[in-house]
Image (cartoon, rainbow, N blue to C red):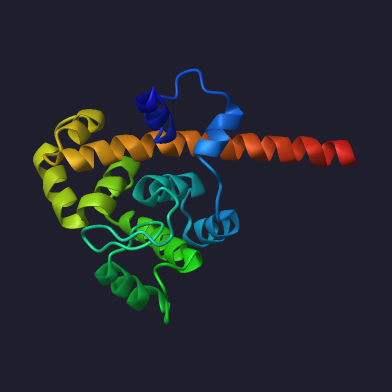
Length: 188
């Protein structure tokens, strides 16, 4: 029974789940920051939300074994790179706004290498250099097969998890927009 709750909590078993529970498992924390920086950097907020969920489970203070920090698990060296590109100074990677801004910028930056979300996610997880090498090796395969041939299981699993979360966030954000439109029309 405990395993069932754990798999539900971490999004592994979503069969038959209602929307209210889905909203609890995939909350829209820090919505203003996601909307602001997704618009600024032209990234789907559902993708940024999905990365945050799978990277940190909404823990702004988390530090990984590899020293990645905060909601979107930004490496200090990546933060320094982003700071140089964007002019962001005096940032704190445990500050939600700073972390979301940098993570969303970095997702946009990775679109310079690839346009497919799965390859962007591979870059985010394993780095652009590795992803470019893998892409060069497997480029003759259909994309959905190529992703499954990535030699690091963590990255393959990461792509699957974030992609699932992306589609759930896409649904939840659209659902919220529809509810807000309905409420607004009723107030007229």
